[in-house]
Image: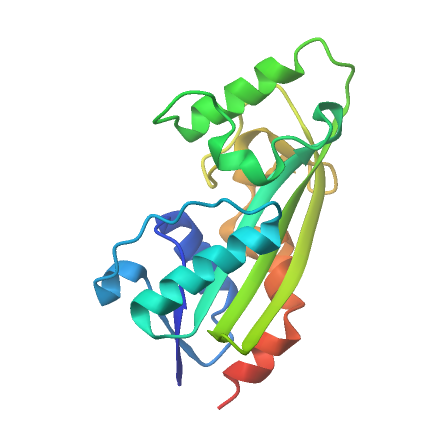
Length: 198
């Protein structure tokens, strides 16, 4: 069984990725499992660059292969914002996920609906400096003014998926881990599947 460090201090993200990766023969670690305490500045200009920055930092700190992911919400009415700045979109410190959702709705106020949007994810497998692989995932939806659901984080409670008639935060964990942008990035990640084979 191969060891893989998830390059995130976000417990929700670790839970999601653990479920999505459960069919692979992998032993997953959180940074704190290994005594790794890193806060990595995401200074890249793309999801790929941010994922690579995180992967390199966590690999150097742990010596293990790393799975990093960078995700963001892109809203057409905001010209693709918040995008790679999704986590840092709110212009004040210590913002909660609820703060981010309502700040987003404030920025959309007065703009014509529907507020079409997409979640994007880039997953990156960093085995070593010579073996780096990535995969992309996308989930289409729209932003709604209702704050709905408890089973999610980030912008999930205001991201509505018409096919499901639910927000991302209203989906069951099982369904979310099949159709989310993060799930799609992992499902299409052939290099990761091949590497994980015993």
